[in-house]
Image (cartoon, rainbow, N blue to C red):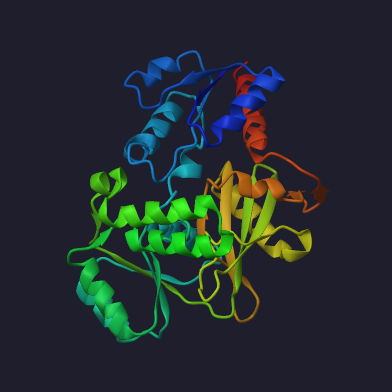
Length: 347
């Protein structure tokens, strides 16, 4: 049994490699960007590649490579069911509606006239989003029909940059006020530079246009709950809103105590992960006026160090297992179990 691991420093691959080395798991480093990646993986049973939504090269072909390897009979992390909807809020809307998941009501339009007619019948505020972007980028609170109409006109006109440059600069200022350290100062200057210098992702991706996407604004939420299910284990963080802002994602203000989490969210995450099925499913929850949990967005990936302070995890029976753990180890363990099960069936 042998794993192929694409290594990008700062991603899951750091911990995958260390875990394989510590536990005698056979692996090799491969290059998913190489033209001969299929050949590189000939002697491997699986590929592990933590590709990122901001990698303009990966988004061109990661899903296609994944499906091709699956067609060959190899395992992949993330596999197609886990990663196809990554950083695609419109795709997530369709998926959660099809599965009957409790999602914040969401609306997408591909026709300007229909979108404008809908604005005349709906209520405000609403939340405007582009289909991609993380950490609350490309997310705006729309307070009235006039502001919404301007966004619709732009969506079906010149469109939007794939990454909100001013949002990144404003986030840098917010982090400086919060952290007041050298890294925060550096972040401000990087954000300022990005206002004038587009990223390589923006240059390659082009502008977002031809659709408009809104979600209902659910009041009285000063935090969201992130639940992540990896196989038969789930863990959580609470992300508090930025001061004077409705957004929680990217705030960096985190709560970890078990008592903070509504186990209904954990159960929903396990159930939805089984339906997909998903190797790694991260769901962001808020609560409606009846205190029922609603899903805002979904993902397969997550920041690494943020979860090192989690105080434990749940199993599928919602039993709590206190103590430190490494989520990336769960991924390797589950993948190895899948490979072993397939080999047993084949023999």
